Amino acid sequence: MQIMLKMQVAIDGPAGSGKSTAARQVAKQLGYLYIDTGALYRAVALVAVRQGVDLNDSATLANLAKSIDLEVRMQPDGSPVYFIAGKEVTDALRSPEINDRVSQVAKLAAVRERVTEKLQALGDEKGIVMDGRDIGTVVLPSADIKVFLTADLATRVQRRQQELSNRGFFVSAARVEEEVRQRDREDANRQVAPLKPAPDACVVDTTNLNPEEVVSTIVELAKQRAQNRTSQGRNSR
Image (cartoon, rainbow, N blue to C red; front, side, top):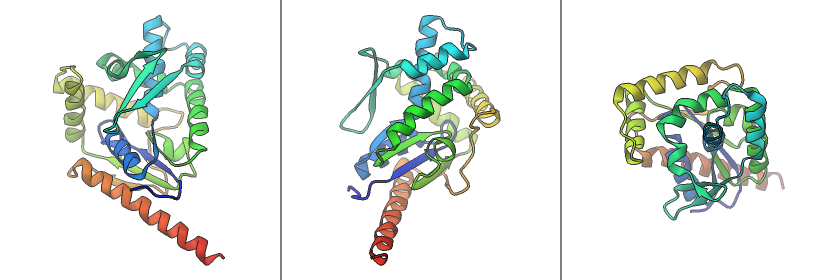
């Protein structure tokens, strides 16, 4: 199914809420472009770690964010494969090492400014689905559809642990829980673009929903919005 009316879909939520899985499938069903905003922050963290850059060096990290060339190639199943300088980094971006460091990079105002500029330029085309932590509040505040996904802590830890396992990283539930709790604290309390639902976002608790149900909920919102826009356009003629 492809909606002819091109819109911006913003999906936010904490770690393990299911936003990346949902966003990929929503984009596929709508025929939209999927943009994983977290991958940009992870790419900055990855390059910084590999180059030995101090993760408190805001100016250097901002320059990295501005210059980094992250290439995304979508697979037939809707999953993205990431490349930096021609080398695949998909698993490296989601490694425990980068999980532990990405918040430190993402909380820096100069880094967020550079990444936001890139994302807003991509969003100008519309017909996109972005997922992250400040899409509906900062990156695309005028998005046509804003969704905030959440889930209880135990469910989010289980999902994160399974994701890591699928990528070949076997991490204890205790360590994953601490990582998720720490990420929650940093995301909610940072001074720049803290994690919170946009006032006009539709909040969806995914604790007891499977991925297909989450996707169906968001796609239905998109269909309703498209129908409303079409009806408004007809009535204004």
